[in-house]
Amino acid sequence: MIVLVINCGSSSVKYNLIETEGEAEICSGIVERIGAVTSIIKHQPGNESARKESKVILNHAEALQEIMNFLLSSENKIINSPDDIKAVGHRVVHGGEMFKDSVLIDDVVKEAIEQAFDLAPLHNPPNLKGIEAAQERLPDIPHVAVFDTAFHHSLPPYAYLYGIPNRLYRRHKIRKYGFHGTSHYYVSRQYYKLNEKPKSQIKVVTCHLGNGASIAAIKGGESVDTSMGFTPLSGLVMGTRSGDLDPSILFYIMEKEELSLNALHAMLNRHSGLLGLSGYAADMRDLISEAKNGDRRCQQAIDVFCYNIKKYIGSYMAVMNGCDAILFTAGIGENSPLIRKKSVEEMESMGVVMDQEKNLNITPGKIEKISADSSIVDLYVIPTNEELVIAIDAAKIATASNQSPWI
Ligand code: AMP
Image 1 (spheres, rainbow, N blue to C red):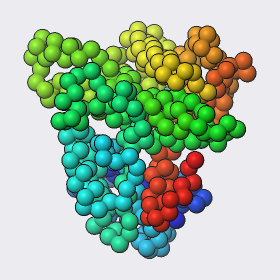
Image 2: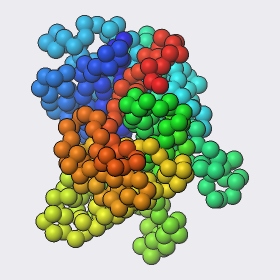
Image 3: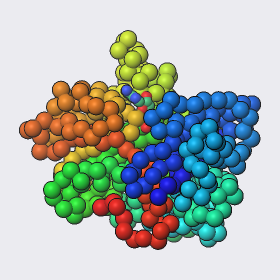
Image 4: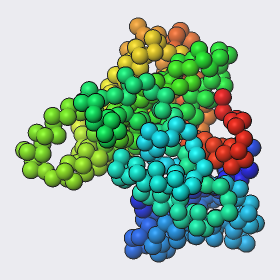
């Protein structure tokens, strides 16, 4: 089945056209800077060279139209008719407490996504815009919402409750939700396929290390804890997000720096993390190269990043009474031997030993084992594929089949 996967940000629409039976990507692309003076459009049809252009794209509906025009154009011949697309899968960041699985989108679901605007003000509003634009353009096929939070629905109350008055949970649903669910789900399933043990006996720590970063503890196929919380701001230090900090710091800096709530929000989300620590860049490649040139603050940013990863890995091994594997994924996890090495070094007493040769010599895009033969815990690099999870869930729901190809 051909499924269109849509991921809408405030000024961008990413798409992937996926043939689900063969798990093959037919085309992908992005429309960026929607609403700016000129928008940038990129399409990547299969293995062909990428097509790029600049154009005025005023809103998400126009971006969708642009994407459909490209897919349908006689020159590109990617699909012959809109009817070739049998379902649309939408990435939705926050499903609140309502959704523990992907769902067929109807008015009630759209209302629930809107109710979660307060919980994810940067993500859910553009996600809903994308849904409405796509439903307008492709009205006769099923649209499915796949939530970043859904996989973490299995967290027990002792893992998702914060130590604040319980009425705040009851009134405002303040609790840990967790994000990057499709990625943690996907890489853990890839590991199960390599394993002879039944899923119910496998414990893994999945490290999604990208510009946004989170770690999950997955026991018997279910997420039992994860580093992101009420919002994607908590947990690990990220590209521009602070990760965990003492909440008193907020009152203190608001007063000392005379910051408004908006300014504080911007500082923690956009000017902190690796960027804030280094004062130089949010991008790990830039930090690694400057640290090599002797920049002390870039080196410190890398050290803080890796130290936090190690702390979470250690605590999740404690939570699960050990683990079978630690899995690295996403931009940094898949591509940086240095960060992988620093994140698990000197953990021999916990049964974690990396083979540095293997860690250095992996093939990009492939699943690679990087633990030493002496390691009790497996270490793997597993490329993530969140879009495939979304496409397969959308196909499954569109055909109303309960037979998931995932384990
Ligand atoms: P993502 O959000 O998953 O696209 O990941 C983006 C992050 O991956 C950025 O911080 C990039 O610098 C980082 N990244 C990509 N390639 C490499 C690499 N070869 N070495 C280190 N970091 C990388």
